[in-house]
Image (tube, rainbow, N blue to C red; front, side):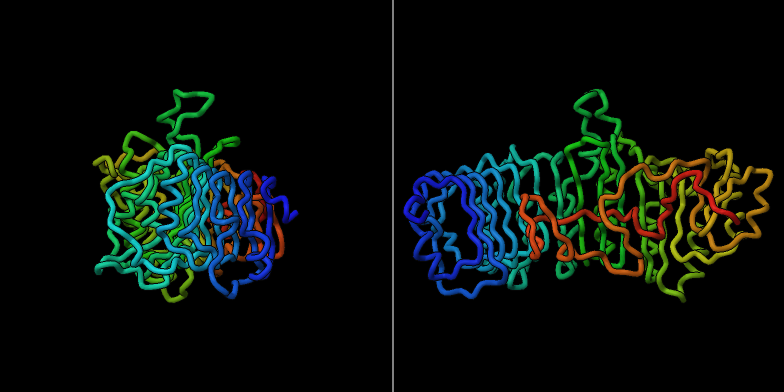
Length: 470
């Protein structure tokens, strides 16, 4: 085979020694279209090499995992359509900028678990490349080996990459990044580079172009103990996906970014928006206050992990739900005016305060609120509907799991992730194998799996009508 590299169109190379690779795989392969380079552990560098002489001008698909001794500066390419690089050492971010710029037909780009050599290779540029063919973008766990500060201005590789090229918001998008060190980052900076989920939700259906202002999916925003995960669940058959995971990012920043993203499209009414808030300190109640005037939120789940805050959070939540506020459109409404379902995690309150909240929410003079025909209470083992003339029976209850304002269908989605307890940390992508490229193995080669906060086992997810016995 080594004597016929000039005829090879597809090759996969696994775990070669530096000597073997340098001896057999450095001559040109002018017909090569698909290349996979993979090692099982971080390499010991013995000097940089140029696979196939660095001439990749015919290459269309490139997959690299844990391969750190490539002389990238000498690589020539221009026909790449699919690129996936995972855990690759000795890589400068300027290589990625050049890759994006020189491969105008790029459709798939996946960068995972990469610590770029230095942020000092960044150059100030106001120009951006239009990636008009991009369909699938994954940027996960990217960092700089140094602090990421250039001229005292904080940088992060995920944001730097997003700044350098433009693409349609309606693609399969997965971003997972931690910008804890960039606590000074401006939410407007996030707003300028992160695509809005509403762009996907408001995209017209291929079968019905008239639905451009009628979203065809559901938005879930989960503020956890580690950050914000924002996902879009689309109707079956939709080719677009959206998952943005801002890990360890200050909630003050993610709150403002999400709020501005929702307000950017005032003409779009979401079909459903589930807001999940996990509270472990008092200041995180600001998540609720920030969105209380939002006419988008239809589901609200609140989890409490700190015992000494439980009573205060329960009291404050009920107070918010029964207090008028100014909506995003400037009208006086009850907090979360479109709310149809309320879920609790670790709720130990009694029925009296809940009953008072319900009566105030739908009976405050001068505040318009659509009063549902029934109130549905879900507890740990049963559910029951209460008509308005029997609401007093709620007073004797405790240990609520969810309250539906009306007869509400359960969240209309199939699981796209794993069920996680709110007491556990967010799942690590490294724990799971994936098969984005048709290559699986014990190393978990491939992409990331999506996290669906609606599957937390404290969120209200039983099928409607599946009642137990009191």
